[in-house]
Amino acid sequence: MASPSLPAVLLLLAFPAQAAGSEPVLQRVEGGWMATVVVPSAPDVVRAALADVGDPALRSRDVISMEITPHNGCQEVRGRTRGLSRPLTYHTLRCPTATGYRETLQETGDYKQFESEWRIDPVEEGSRVSFRTVADPDLPVPRALVLANMKRSTLAMVNALVDQLAGGR
Image (cartoon, rainbow, N blue to C red; front, side, top):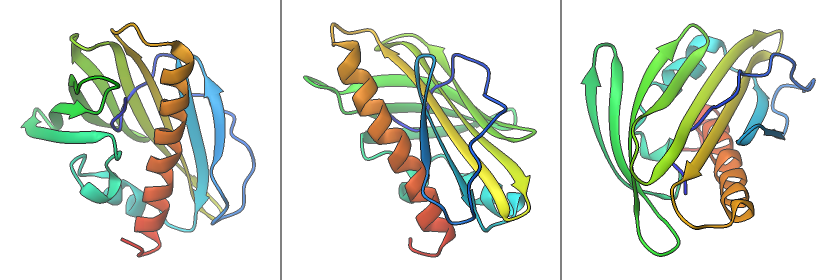
């Protein structure tokens, strides 16, 4: 599974309390996972770090390839991710929001649902960053396996952002 993508429910507004530089906290959300962390960086710094969906430092390790095209202030993404028996394809639109970035499925194919959202909220310590992913591949794969992979990928994406912000690129 997985690229940086995927929300089917409204973003939760209540987050666990965390100290800056803390470890990400994983939460199960409808259809997927959300990881939240507090970083000692201002929201504009975090937003700039997340601006390029194609940045290899922030890509899921499951992404094989991406073609990114500017589209009305957004980024149109056509990608391939690792699947169990073959690569999976997706076509999404990633757009800036008032609080981060949201990526939504544009064409069905190997996914019935595929969304993600980065949310950046200012806090006293810097920024609270949440990454929520929801995916439903259109394949005969046990849901537990999809969720386990999505959990790993969601946490890896947030850890990659934390490393990038700390200069550990």
